[in-house]
Image 1 (cartoon, rainbow, N blue to C red):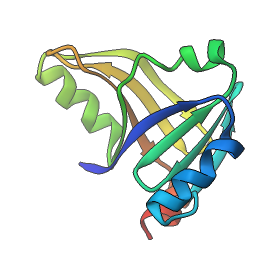
Image 2: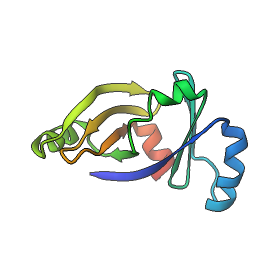
Image 3: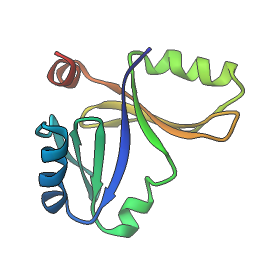
Image 4: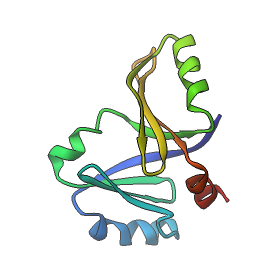
Length: 123
């Protein structure tokens, strides 16, 4: 079910932050897009989230971004394990996402990529 996991990095400026990450990972961003008032880039196993601190704070409650093959099945798995969906399914430029709280307290953003994004990132 899990296709990819990203560690989240919170930055003020994407253009300033990306060169070091590119050098460290040996990769260029495979995704880069705007969402609401923030900008995101995926480089290696990092999801870099940039923008004004107040805007970034709206998304800071999740500790990781996890890409799954089936968001609807994920909802059932989270519920069966005693967790809860804290933000229902919504759309983004890369597909659909939601936020969940696991029974143990972990808060995670789960994403189901659209076909175009899945092909771009996973081949």
